[in-house]
Length: 180
Image 1 (cartoon, rainbow, N blue to C red):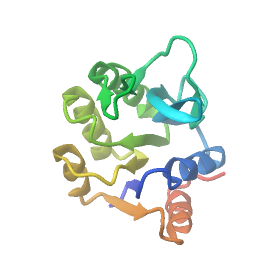
Image 2 (tube, helix red, strand yellow):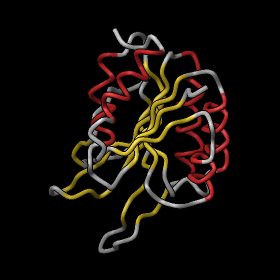
Image 3 (tube, rainbow, N blue to C red):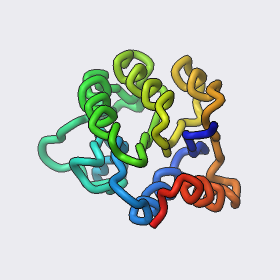
Image 4 (cartoon, helix red, strand yellow):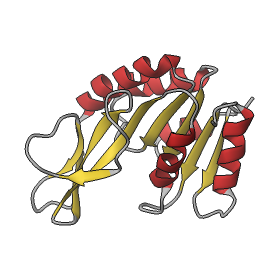
């Protein structure tokens, strides 16, 4: 039985925006996590991991002051991203555990920076195996962790550039009695 619905596609195409549009329509609390973009001068400079049961879903915010739950960042004058594995393993695992009672679990997003975050990977796979409904974003990248998720037979993956994706998501959520 399909209990997990993932969106995928190229960067900045609206995967997280689709999830944000559906969240107010969900009956009961939605828990889990999302990755918030931090902007400086209009450019993305970092991302933080946000527990949905602690903070509202805001896709981006200005980068100011001290950052809690820093997940991925760019060093000054570097094009490379640096993951903070401990944030995945502490904040991410805690968000998944805390959301175990929620009718809908959000995993926005899963990507390549989790490759060394083994406790986080285990927590994700445990939740995917559970009967809980999961809605998430799966990066369009290759890696052992992402490929293991794609190989599961209890999930559907939909591309955001498919015009039917939002209708399919709405139907998926309706079938599970999750929409108000």
